[in-house]
Length: 632
Image (cartoon, helix red, strand yellow):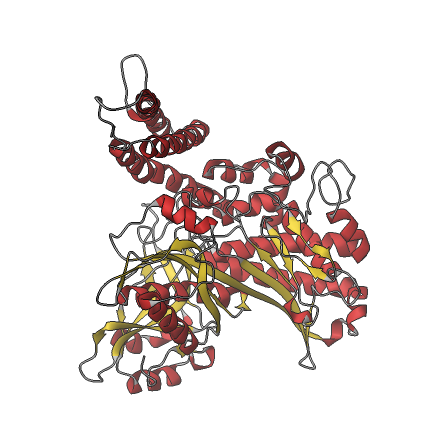
């Protein structure tokens, strides 16, 4: 990593004179690339020679100099084949990063060739249709709406010792914690070995060694060069000890890691996350390891989350910063904080489709893996005892010695969650709750009582039949029936999640306020998710399952096998046939789900998917038992 490289181009330099000077002084920067993010989180990339950029810089900075078509972004029902043109408008208000190819050294300068990554907005027929623009509009709406609410209900600032005229700007801060798995290519480890190591917590915060240590340290150093201010990197709960070879190298690497960095503004935080993923993938690749950001890459072992933090502050004209979630009294948080949290919890059914949007994500959200499965929050046992509950959906993070640290941690996102849309929906629902709290002159005590209500107790804002707060272990201290009765039915498939956007019309109205989402955008998003869901099932999940089932072969010797071996195998083979072998008398589950996909019978596909997953889990369990009893 060369000290002479340019890593970040701040917004103050997004002008013709500064950029021309910089590019002439750094000829190793040979390309620019516009980075737009479509509705399901796909990022665009192209290589535009710097020469072209310099010749038409005014258009790049002030207009829409680059166009693409609907085949390069996924915007179904919007960018159709007969109307596919997408315009790309550079965002000059956010940081631009220079992405270096350390495998390609410029012969003239001896430095790696660089590409300026310019975040941009995507426009179709003059209307912004991308994830970044949705978050931009949500941010503007939230800041303006909250400022208006504070102006209409100025008593909310009384305890802070200021009034509305003292506020220069309402600020949103956000950050993500990124978990991921690293492994040496084509070097698999046994699932039981991984599961045992996880149960014993042998890897959690253990020492990193060898190539993993080198890649981790290089990643943190490089992140610092880009100004991300990394806070820590460490091992997560998943993984096993690598094998030490005679030459001192390690093989059989399969470890789960986490990297955290400092918060930023909402859009910048999401942009930062995208670029940090680039850094991680490239650094670990150069050290001989694959990286996966899949939510659940290994069955039966801990998945990867991406906890998302959000906070709200007011910057005063004096320069002082006030955390608007922090309570100046002996309470968990302020009226604005309580209102924000209640807005998220009440409307989470329509937030969830933007957080958990893939087959892979639902594999992670299972009991017993520290991943949330219920709409419930934790505040802490008392205002003096901050929450440490890892089983809930969203927690209040507090530090009594640092009021600025008060924030929410949403635990349901995973590394493939579209952070732009996740934060946007959080902001829109937070406004709804804040407006309820302020317009009804609710006190902190009133709101604490409402969010702590039992199922069946009346409430002015939250739903009567639900509970919304628990300081207990959601997995161990409640039965399955109690969890569903207290906290609502948990969606198990993409379809069950997406249909919330049709079933909860009153909650969808919260997302449409401020013209942040439109019916057109919501329709495109739902269509995209359902198409992706069906395609993954048919062309990824079923072929992978079929390969696994075919490899599940009889291992016993018919001459020496016990009656138990034969009985076990018969149960296994019956499941294999039920899952994927047709006969004149009976159609397999695989054929049934393919037929339902062809007909776009979403409900049937969803039900069959759940059945297939259950049957396959049973097959795996029985096969493990069967193999353990073989001694030949």
